[in-house]
Every structure is written in structure tokens, then in C-alpha cells.
Image (cartoon, rainbow, N blue to C red; front, side, top):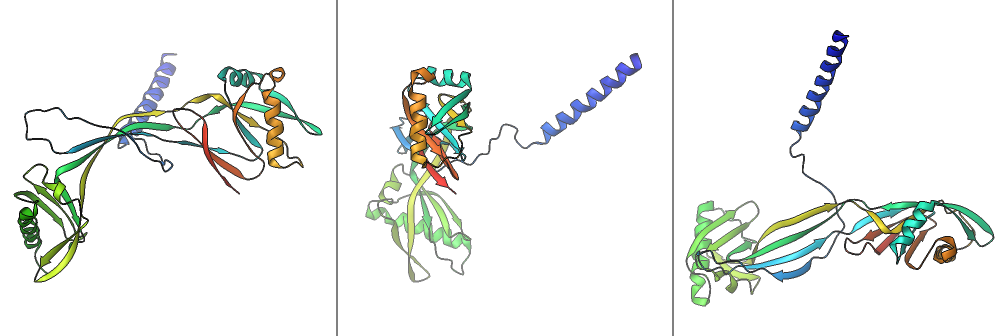
Length: 296
């Protein structure tokens, strides 16, 4: 018995070692990779930075709130119903099986809890630099990179006479991409350049136009992933194919689930698909269907 117990313990230890090695081999076990739908950022406020005794802060600090829309694939002969009262949705889910009158026939359909896929919400902190500008479309010339950096530094230093520029702290230049970053010593110096997108630039006795844009720093904060079961929305499965058009069937489903005698209540939104499929997006704050696109 002891030998058998030792053998089993050794097997368990080997399994634990394998699990530990697999876990350790991951680059970052907490990393989440997920494609999200295109979205618009919602500007919330300008952020005030506390004075820590350093040089005057001439940067602009913006905060954007981001909540991803969670897409759900609604397949053929399925329906989504969102009720005003979450108790109605919970009651219908517990009942599970329902007999729905679709004109000349009775259909047995199933109500399932509506599970949302993983979504995210976070804050995007954007800093517009008051000392740095991005430069692009820098011409590629047969001169050393150091010479080009010197020409860029001299060019943007000279523009001090035109209400900008001045002492330059650092110049970075990438010959392959034709881009660079100019860092001025004086806070707020960059504001005089971002008003225009193109600036004349002379190099090797030839005039070019280079592009100038603000320099941004991005920081993601208060990141919160979430997976939830919707309290107000139910998923209806097993709707049979009938001769009536999709809109008529949707109306009949809505009438059935609005009746208190069937355990229903007031419906905010309904989406039924008879052919193909549709993607319906749910937002974090409301859980209501906001948009959908049908595909064959």
C-alpha cells in the first residue's frame, strides 16, 4: 500500500512540475490579446498636473474614457429580447421552454441566459508635449546622419526670430523612415510650430517641405476587463422557419413575450434573424443593443 501511494504521489508531482514549466514558459501570463471593434473616444476632462518644483509644465494633459462595444453573433432562427425590467428576463430564463404562437402553428422555443463576451473599459491619458515636435518627410540626402541632425537643429533653432524655436535640447533622426523628433529647451516652444503642417527646409542648397506634427505620449490606466451575463436580455433559440416574413415573425415573438400571462413584460428592443447572421453590439454602460450588421 505504501509503494502504491508513493507511486501515485510521484505521478502527481510530475504533473505539477509539467504545469509549472508550462506556466513559466509563457512570456506574460497576465497579457490579454483581443481584437475589438472600431470605437470613438469620449473626451472627459483636461488633467491638471501638480507642481512638483520642476520647470513650468507647458504640456497639455487630456483624459479619454473608453468602453469597448461587445459584439455578439446572432445566428439564424435566433432572437434577442431586452426587457425594461430585469425580473422579467430572469423569470423567462427560469421557465426555459416556451410555446409561441406563430400565426397558424405553435413553436416550442428555448430561452437561454445571454452571456456577453469579454469587454474592456479604461482611461486613455494623452499628453501633448510643449517641448517636442514630430518631423516627417525629411529628404534622404547622401550625407551622414549626424550632418542631417545638425541641419535640423540649426533650422529649428533659427526660427526663434519667427516666434518659435530657440535652444534645442535634443534631435533624433531616423534616415530609413525620414522622421525625427525635435526637443526644445524652452517649455511651450512647440506651440509655435504645430499651427502649420508644412515648413520649408533648406539642405544642400535645395529647398524641401517637411511635415511637422504634435508629439503625443499615451498611457492606458484603470484597465478593467469584464465578462458578464446580461440581466435584462435573453437569447431565444429554436424559432422554426415559417412562410411569414422576418418582420412579421419578430412582431409575433414580441407580442407573446409582452403578455404578463406568458410571464413576459415590456420589451425595450428585439432583434430576430431568419437567415444568415447578424452582429449586435452591446455597450458596457447600458447593455442595450446599439447596432447590428447582417451578413449572409
